[in-house]
Length: 256
Image (cartoon, rainbow, N blue to C red; front, side, top):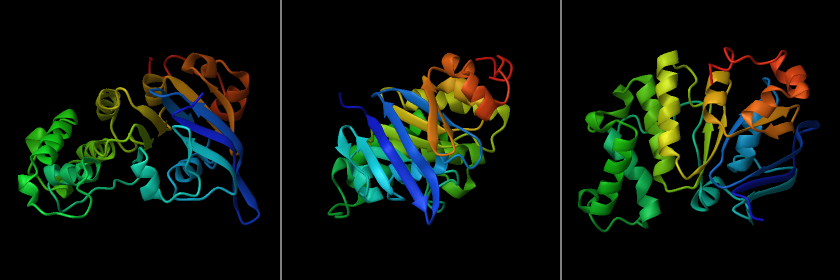
């Protein structure tokens, strides 16, 4: 069986320090996975390995059945995986529309050869408009990205991440720094724009985790110690001891 994303005995050392210690994970197409764990557990390192920022010390990473470990980030992106970062990554001096149009160009085959003016690329312009509407920034179309609110900039980054046409999306703490009301709206936005896509997100807000994820992967000391539905993870004794400390109540889980 071919998974959308699979980690096989993945390991990563920095010098003599082993950060990822034989991580295994198999994600089906279309699943929404939240990756949780205490600070220093290796969550960001896993994302960096999957997206090609780091090469693994050993083990395998497969995207739709094809190995991607040791490939460059741009190669992995062209194979169908995109990610966002904890720190917002946008083009601040381009408009909302221009940011999204840049994101769709490669997927439409334009690459870096522009034989036409961008304004004449109807398919790229139409697709950029579509994503702009999906992230609800159509009323901010011509505003420079640097002048958006923080939550709007995060929404734009999500739009850029999905606009390249990737089927596997990695979001690194997408709701960090948002208010409770902004977070609630953002969860709904993420659900809408990732329909039919495979989603992995690193998240500390348990309300977001239980409100968004089909399954939760718990990472402790570089290992995936549990991978199951939110309900099963919530009642897992090993998870409670290693990460949550106590049983997660409905209130702690944001009522989800």
